Length: 502
Ligand SMILES: [Zn+2]
Image (tube, rainbow, N blue to C red; front, side, top):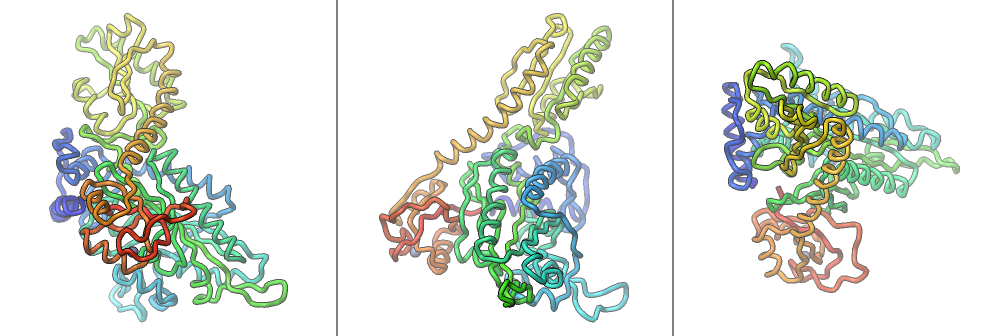
């Protein structure tokens, strides 16, 4: 999918970057299974989620997408505050000397840093990096603020944008040069406390992704080769697309004392010794929304879990004669009023479109539920209700609409995760030989296998399979490994998930 996605969206990117044009209002013209990259590009634009900007790789997040990001922010903010994390804000410009302080970190990021070199007409004495992530600028402050063990733990988070000037083909949300995220940064007195924090945050992400995004999540540890630049280990939430590729959604890192030694962040312990702090950092970005769109959508367009959908319910009034209009509209308005305190609901009263056109439009935009009401329905004191994920129409008495809608939205949220999990389980195979592994990759499976976890073994796998890699190493490991490394035959040390990577 990488090849398809990039080529198509890159073309789109170039086209739109040079000459912004109005997107025609029509349904999705390509089947998801036939050309997923074109499908993705069309859905993002036609469902009014993103638009292209004049800079390739930088995208406009339109209100319907931003509303989804706001929900993520609200829900996540509650969780981190429960864990004692406070929000703060640090500058986006980082002096080069500061960025260079932690060697692994700078090596990991330098290929994709965007620089400010000039202020007005004068060259700057020192280049300023536009933050690719904020470890360095935040830890400069941590060093000033942390003096004694009483200053620990320090737990800060910021909601911000970052810029990573990727030279690979940009894809909206999934691979963009600027994106929005939150980045949490904590400092602790001990290694164990930091380890617990990194794990706790991974679990907060996993729960958010399962409960709100309805995505089945593989929690685990990244391989050494995939560890964040500057971390001692990285934990990740990954998922596996029904189309057969794995993707990392978010990460939580144990930074150990790598940064605290480089930035001199320390405290005096009871014995009066100067001790380096143990740190974590963790983040989730708008990339997760691209994954959401790509994962759940179908040939008609977006399918969104109710907890994140910007529009949960759309009411479509049906009348053809002017005599019916008043009755239908007044019933429709009544229903909207009864629902709007508890749900996000839109009454689509646009006169220039037919009811059938509106059905398609809202299916494409991922409204979770559609309520149709016409003269006959009013006579029967009922409405027709159609759930986006199931697609079946059901007659519901007007008196019971609110109750029905509430229970069906809860059911839809649950069903979407259940079905997605079933598909992931069905796509998973355990293999013990190289042949089985290659066959499973060709069949687009998610592979679980014994592995040596050595970087050179992973590099050989990537080379041999055109981009397969370890996704992560699940926390639940067998007590005893029954076979040697499936890939290279050396001693296996873990069981890992392996897949073609998005
Ligand atoms: Zn190996």
